[in-house]
Amino acid sequence: MSEKQAHKRVIQGRVVSIAGDKSAVVLVERRVVHPKYRKIVKRFRKYIIHDEENKSRVGDVVTAIECRPISKSKSFKLKDVVVVGVGE
Image (tube, rainbow, N blue to C red; front, side):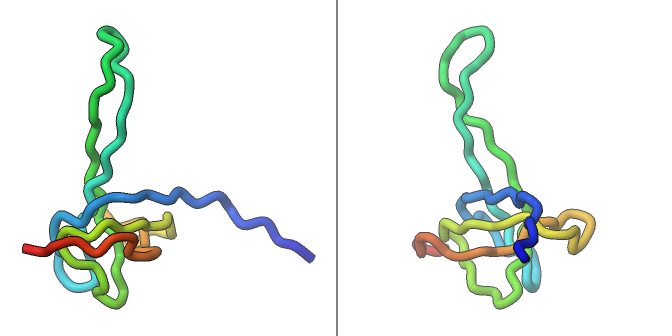
């Protein structure tokens, strides 16, 4: 019996700060084409992710997966650390 799992969004970005215990702020950058000028521009969004074991540090590139809402602003969990960066 195979059960279908709901599609979960996966984001990848750089940790810009540690937001208290078990939380990190991840900056996700995406490139889009400007509708009028047809130039590629960067768009940024910050996500607060749940880091259960406090593995991420400032400067790391991480991936996070969507989960149930953990708090008002947290609905992503840390999946893994892709690149260990130089911290501050």
